[in-house]
Image (cartoon, rainbow, N blue to C red; front, top):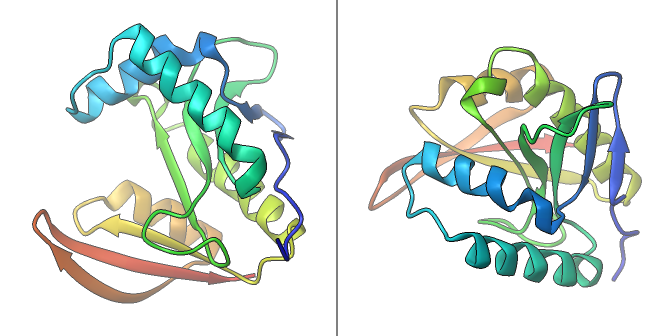
Length: 165
């Protein structure tokens, strides 16, 4: 791999971002439920978390859970994924529980992940966002991301945003 691996733990002034643990299964289930997906059982969620942990070192990028420093409450996640992009130019992804919205956590976490991506030697990140998701666009704007193009799938428009590192 031509890139250094992304850090498995990142700290900001208010947040601790770390690799998923099996104990995150309940928070993950709540997040999936809030977005309206089929909620996995606890054993299914634990299996997904185990798979993600095992594959993270080989990819060198991953999603990290978010918590306020000094607290154990699961807030959501932020990190890098291949998604619709590539391992060379991955996507930044974030999703927070509704109770964590409106506190600047997504922007704070995403800023830290951009710095972590830069430290891997990558030169560009992507973010794909559904056209209706105004809060995600506000986070991306604060990061200095620019809109690049739009594609459409069976669920509607997808706006491709790019950040040159």
